[in-house]
Image 1 (cartoon, rainbow, N blue to C red):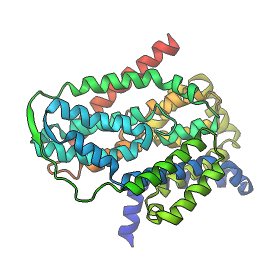
Image 2 (image 1 turned 90 degrees about the horizontal axis):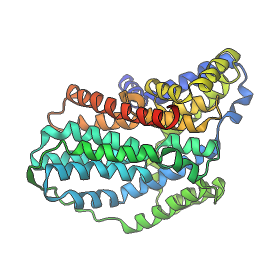
Image 3 (image 1 turned 60 degrees about the vertical axis):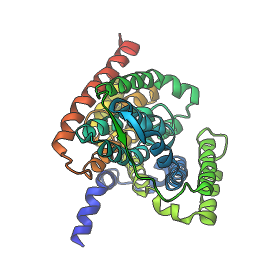
Length: 372
């Protein structure tokens, strides 16, 4: 029992912190009756719909099948690195940064080991983590905090894209240039074929459900109707997917909704956070992400500002930096450690350098666009 508790605390550390914060805030605010009103059920429902559809697409084998086909064969190290990094960059725009890394980091391990390039593994996986975080930031469904901000502030797709497009283009250029550090050495990448074929029925079902989720995100379809459609389709055709939804993330959002709502009713703290978000919104959002991760930071700080633009840029760029700034980075590290000869120290050394360079460039671009 004790071991199970320890495993849970380690695997759901952010949820545990969020729950503790919610409980403390309830004691401080002392008004439990207001709690249901603090929770944005639309965000929770849309996250569930999209996560269920993406989990189904992942289980169908489609993404892995396509990725293996691209990487397999005789290629240069530079070309393999480029493919392995660009796969999560573009995939994260639709299937979220977490899912992109869960899918493509193991592929990187297989491909580089098969080609005899184990010494490049830490570097490539760090680039994959950076690529997934920065690629996912350019769409409303790429990162969980994006969906929250897009929904909470009622943004249009055009406004959202305009805010983040310059950073997405810089990220694409920088990740491409970073791949040039790999050599031109050529080798055969021999990845075993997977016996299980792509489940076409599952692709069709969850592709349709993903479209339903997008329609709800864009407010073309009511979120209640989307939730009902997705739940009914899963019950009728693919009940296994209910177990693959990240309920820990949903619970984390609920806890931070409660925490944020209660904190807004504490005058001293509310004034302090409102002051920070009024004077330095982007910097406050970015720094808060380094400490509590960018998803909780977005939920907490949204209650104290109407400046969605700076909040959005701050929490998305805030995914760079420390390992806990984005949960996707922790996923990449965890998957890397399964590889033979993996070294936490080697990974963190590369991680710190690459994240510092990318973060400095992104903040520099922000300064050029909005400060100077």
